[in-house]
Amino acid sequence: MNASTTARGPRTARTPWNRKNPYRARLVDNRILNGEGSTKEVRHYALDLGDSGIEYDPGDGLGVHPVNHPALVDAVLDRLGVAPDSVLDGFERPLADLLTHSVELHTATADFAEFAASLPCDGTFRELVRSPDFASWAWGRDVLDVLEAVDGPVDPAAAVAALTPLKHRTYSIASSPLVHPGRIHLTATTVRRRDTRMRSGACSAYLADRVGNDGAAGVFLVKNKSFRLPEPDVPIVMIGAGTGIAPFRAFLQHRRAQGASGAAWLVFGERHREHDFLYRDELDEFLRDGTVDRLDTAFSRDGSGNEKTYVQHVLRAHGHDLAQWIDRGAHMYVCGSIAMGAAVDAALRHALAEHRGLSPDDATEVVAELRSTKRYARDVY
Ligand SMILES: Cc1cc2nc3c(=O)[nH]c(=O)nc-3n(C[C@H](O)[C@H](O)[C@H](O)COP(=O)(O)OP(=O)(O)OC[C@H]3O[C@@H](n4cnc5c(N)ncnc54)[C@H](O)[C@@H]3O)c2cc1C
Image (cartoon, rainbow, N blue to C red; front, side, top):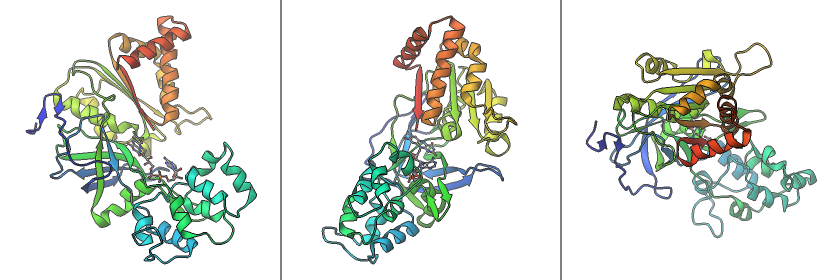
């Protein structure tokens, strides 16, 4: 245990690092976790906290400042018909610098789409922007897609003024400070898609491909006090799909380092066992040494039929055990997509209704009580 940690974890110290003033953390590990043949790209990262003084607890997240892709910056400059080093009226910096570091380009925001729809453009685009279908159209699209809907030239200063400020992205921390003092591990899916051109996520593709060039990324701690391990003797049930495994890797590292006596049950879901069983060796080791008492998996694309098995199906199949773990005082944690979080919530209510003989309303009330007493925490995105 290092000097700055206590038996329960590190003390929380105030640091000067925040959203507006991120710490430049060196990226010291960057590797793909999926096996060959996977349709996904999930990476493991390690960042060195150096002399930042940043101290975290398992369950916390890390804010990362993205840097926009140079090819997208160039394409937007090209569409606006301005040179990279030009400084527009009302802006103090060269345009390329501004577009690279300060505004959202990889996401098609509603504000920017509204701006585009106010210009001469395709009528169906204008309708789309004002319709409830806009969000699904925007998913996977960027600012260049929006600009392509506009007919003719676009006033660069007006366009830049309509862009939204570049936001940090949050990632769940995948390591324990007891095991990796001074380091933070992350587990992140790289968002990228090629069709007519390459589209990528601002932050995930920056971490995957380009931090290497600078060697460091701007980061700050995002505390999550509602996603905390209980006392070491309290049982825990962890349900995670995909990168939702991240905080549970942190939890398990921490519990092993604490010599925790509380039982642990992990339910993990992904696409294929062969390619996508993230941290498989480590999870096997946790199982062997008793840090995890029970590991259930759901690999949705492994079945031969149309029926896909997700983590919520595993929970439904083992509803009796789940109700028993809850009766034994287990704390429950869910991490992964918002849709998965909702499905797990329904499975939990179903398990309680069926195995405790409760009405649906009473089961909902028990779940609400688990949440209010901090025995059921969700980190979904
Ligand atoms: C509390 C919290 C914890 C999180 N923890 C993790 C984590 O541990 N690991 C992790 O990988 N992510 C995590 N995320 C999600 C993460 O913050 C980013 O949203 C994600 O990495 C995408 O950001 P990006 O900058 O790469 O893509 P963006 O630049 O935001 O998006 C680019 C384009 O891709 C689309 N897009 C965005 N996400 C996806 C996607 N998943 N698949 C396909 N298209 C997409 C967008 O609509 C947009 O058009 C977490 C989010 C929250 C709020």
